[in-house]
Image 1: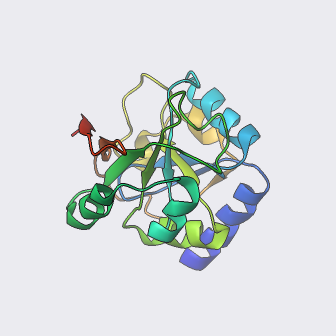
Image 2 (image 1 turned 90 degrees about the vertical axis):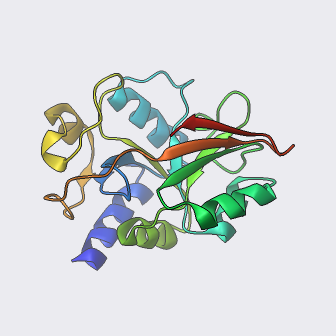
Length: 187
């Protein structure tokens, strides 16, 4: 089942479509993070201004280095010691859709501890967008059942895994500057 769902989601991502999928935090809307048109569809579906950056998921440090020119040492320590899902905002984003990179050239990336996400990013051999499955400004759904019909209809594929599971909370977000400065954005 897991393998089939990864294969189905991968096909949609490669075609530039949107998926709705479970993550290590909440249900997410995703697309290929290098596809500008797909990223634009995510902003449109969420009714979110594209100046508000989205989070990406990657498989590991090696994949992370594809999208961040310089990974601060502190990032490795934070990733290792974090007991909860933690997204890090990095400077000098690269090789991603330009409408995904913030105006200050930063990008928010998380390495999820989640089998489906791990396999999907590995098979794609690239980052996927991961933004909560809600219209901007609406509450984040705490389970699959709470996802609005508008979101369900707006994606090209809904992953058939973990639909009964109550989701966790959104990840913590930490901004790491290359000069060593650390700022907690969301606990």
